Image 1 (cartoon, helix red, strand yellow):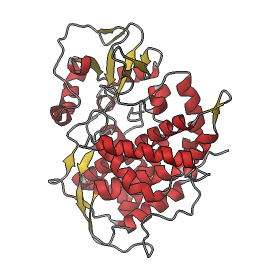
Image 2 (tube, helix red, strand yellow):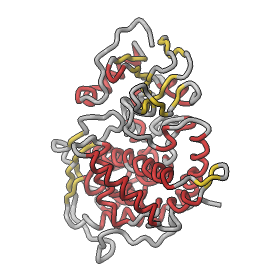
Image 3 (cartoon, one colour):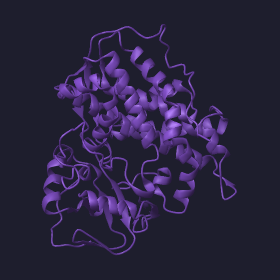
Image 4 (tube, rainbow, N blue to C red):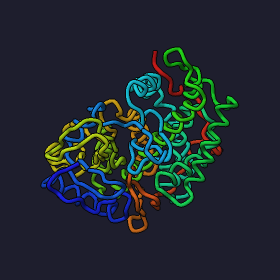
Length: 419
């Protein structure tokens, strides 16, 4: 890895980075689009949209896979430093990644997701029913964590009575909270037990994975659990962050909230702008497999590169007035869900989840106000940028049904592949 620029003390795990990264990236896009850091064994950060998109499409040159290091640990993958364990097919290369993706893809198409929209609505209504009479809640604990946790548990076919524990563990892991490793060990053990005992709905995705084969061979329980962990993380972290960003933005910009209430057909556009402007995923790492140059910087095999998705989505060369939320923004593909062979498998579900949930919130608690002075952002954002805490108040209302159970009773068609 070489160019004429000295390495900088950039640590994407640090509190300074979490606070100042947008300014850092804005300057870089204009003058030095590839940053170099001496942290975590040295890596580069690519900041411009065109360079990010081209590299994410080139999975042959930029590997997502894991490989053995000299110390016996696993290197590579999508995080810097590497995750402690491989995270499913997002940390694999072709052909294996494509084979596994082909099994999962039918569950997350637009038609499959839209056919399950009424069921997503049931989860949304139940969740609001649990707190509507209180007039106050914490967005993170009471709205953002439960909604995607319930949804992905239902998709997998796991019992919904686990939503509190699973949601807590996943959020603490993403937020890098103290003690989160122990929580992850518990969740992984619980998942292994469920798979071993067949403790899952036979119409859910876990059952489909247990029955699936690749080249005539079953996936096996270990791979099924690994893919389930991937889906649990991917199905919760970005949506938790996006819900928080959305409700904060609409508190800070009441004119946008008023327009969405008057024109609910624009909610889909609002969802896209939140994912673009406040990209929950801050970046993804790759390992260079062949010599290549990006924006004047040369890279050699083995170099590690971070593709700064949240910088690319604010690139002024692609998005006019890029740092402003615009409900009328012309459609341009953002990179909030990545690009290429490893684009987020569940992006259609994340979009529908946020769209349906926001519709319900605006109908039933339209005057919500986030307490901006007490809202707390993550202090470390190596992979996900979100909030740890976000108090909110609203005019109390009446539950849509009574009694309100401890988890939703879902009667509408569940998410399934569309034949």
